[in-house]
Image (spheres, rainbow, N blue to C red):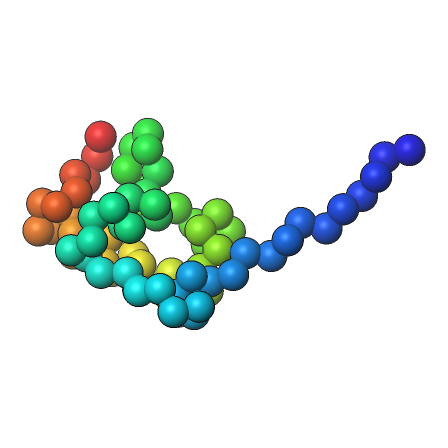
Length: 72
């Protein structure tokens, strides 16, 4: 018999108190794919809709300021 299990829901890190800033490159790299430098979707990052938009804006700021590359 196949056993079924429920996947644990990811908690939004920013709702828990952690903040993302465009100057903090190491934190921003967690929200970008390694292959092409794309912004990871909500279902992978576990961020809520409000904070996913904030993360996307911070990534775009960091790219514009040349802190992270647009593509690998």
